[in-house]
Image (cartoon, rainbow, N blue to C red; front, top):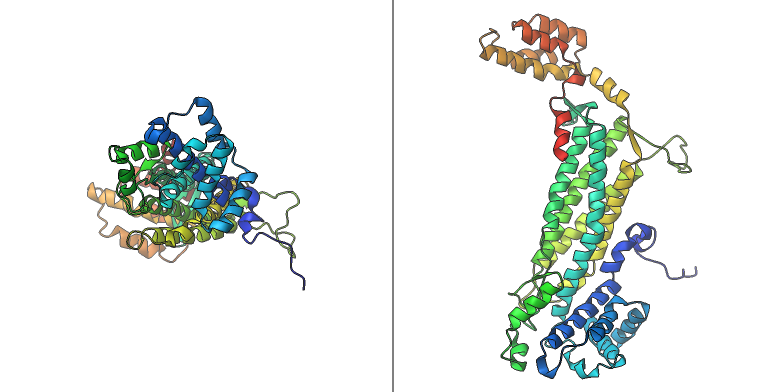
Length: 460
């Protein structure tokens, strides 16, 4: 058997590339290298702006030309770095050589020794990962999460008044509305999204073991911690002053745990909607040309929600591993984080793919209100809660002599189907006041949904 031509190993780079490709601009190897060049270039500018080590501030024109090294970063730089790393066996050193090479081409050899000045690789990497992850989350992942939250909000408002039989422990329970149940997911996700939006993206810039030792040896009169803080915050990220050789990754642990938490809620959404489809509460809108089964022509499978469920499980496992691994580094440095962080894009990729499927899936379902009403009408026994609660209120008000209303309703309804006529006859025979009796006789499973409709308004 002949070998296949080169193929993408991951489905994220093959089958699903169109859905997740926007992440590659930040979380690919090339995206990381572009950010590394950005950090190296901006560090040179920061040093020359302060006229350190005999330098002078660069002209605006030269700053623009220098920043072009990362703003115009493309295939030529990707190929150059690949060739150089094959020799150096060190990715960050290859980036340093690239910047030096381009400085020479720009006629800026005089400041070449300020490239990577007093930096350890993790100064560059921590800033680069903070930049790329922040940009990926803010520009790609969070907008997609908010799109799903928005779709849920639209569904919740559309179906806010659609009564449905709840199922607690899988059994018929006090009715709600489909809109309120969908709103619960939107509410939960919005809360976690707010936590993610408020998170930090930390970087260190303090040398080989976080002590600024080389910096002070070169120039003891500079306030290096303050310069480093100003530099890192100028990049739009947050500064960690107290570290080992590496930034401690706690911000990443916090972020990935929160994204995993959001994924857990989304997984719950996927399985619930799948179940509602199975019950017939939602009908799936046929997509022209699509095939549900290779042998059963009638089928429309809930593939969007199944795909999301599986991808959320994969991403959740990866985020859990990232958080568990990155929280620890032996002594002042080990390389486990380096390998681990190369999978950040994979974790976000599966999460983004799940979000994309959920967003699309939520637009491909329609509510079968007749099925909801038929389900309610077949379960009048759920009004037992309302009846026993009203009876208890009547007893407390001195309008009834019934001794154990819960037991009374339990004997009538537990494990039994009770129809509307039987329940009405039971209510008419109760020892309660006429206004309470009238309220109960007017009640149906479809009207016993409390404030479910109004609660949807809490979404804003």
